[in-house]
Length: 572
Image (cartoon, rainbow, N blue to C red; front, side, top):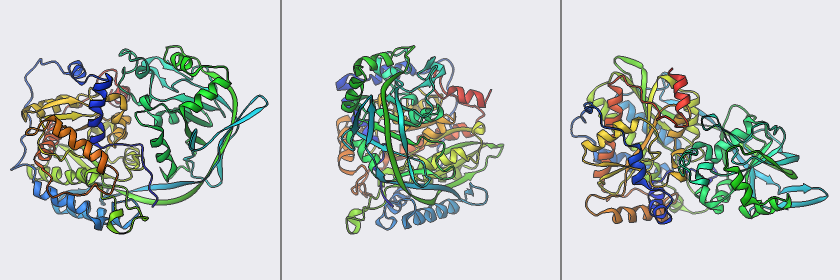
């Protein structure tokens, strides 16, 4: 299977190393945000459940991790022998633990997938008046199509319209498409959202990215508005990654869920470089910086760029099926209500151009570490006995290719959204030893953090916000699909404040992983890893989930969160 280099960057190393950069640049103040969102202490804390027995068995965890990340499993790419080995292993382990199949009478949920490879990709040819000019690949633009039908997909004589940030957000009284008909047109938009651009904490979520700032949302909204194509103007700071990442991510195979022939998506999606955008705006008699400033102001109105676009892509299409693994512990009192623990089992497979084991992307940290965690937390639940509510253990596929396995589950859930209490995600676990800090990605999002804080303090540790909320890491791992469906979702793990060696040691280990191992063959199991901190982290997540499973509370998103309205509609 061809291997893309995804824009979904779950590794803790990327987030934590960004901390120092953010502090150096004055982009965010985690301590201030911690104070902003800390819940008031007004009543005695509820009792937390105990961790059964001697807690996490780090020897058993290491065996699971070493097996899943072994050369035999070949990097666990969907559609390969490595997938079959992974599925067989997980099913056998869940069955041995005594967990029930979670998908009817099966542990496996089929996930139809489509692999799309752009075999032909034109330049973007633009006409303004009598003149014609081109934006060329890869220096100035990259385009693709997620439509899976045969033949060419594209636009011809499609008017370019600048729609600011391309956002429709009723809760913020913001509509960049107000009074605009973009049917058949190509919309051009900015990355991120007005809050980041202005730094105004009263506008969207200030410098912290909201989902409205993500490129995925912008394409979805453009399709809802009836546009034929959408181009996002790349800018490294608000995107949080460089132009090279865009090109690498879009140059390989792309994946989509099968089933709807891709007709619900745009004919073309793509990016243009900042320099290309400046030229485009200048030819329209506009100044890009001025239009960016105008786009960040309430009441923005779209403007034509005075040019028409022609571009097309022809995809090679290959259909297949991958699988999610589901195992459950039915609740004793309210079995129709569930807490979900999830982790993605897939990784990047192997590079066939590199002979032997040197070309295997073992994905030990990303994410055999989280998949092994599912098994150990499941063992704790079995040891403690079934709680009042059901618990679903969900190992999803195709995370590395666009969070597709979790998206498919959320589109076809075993437990309805309104009956799913919470989702707890485990992705790229911290394996550097004990840390005093617990990082919450997307800090300040939901009431789940209140239970997490109590459990963290019971361990003698403390919660810290993610250091760079402007990068939008919350939207780049599988819990996000649950959040988008309104289900409160938590993504938390050990940080960098090493209990014995200090913060600099933790930061150095994070940098080492980012530079040497992340999405590289060097992400291999190391028997010398110190798993004491990992044990604390998993026991923490067990306590949070067990507390919910034994209670009757329904945690919600905090007021003002972009997912609050969806949850409120589910549970009026």
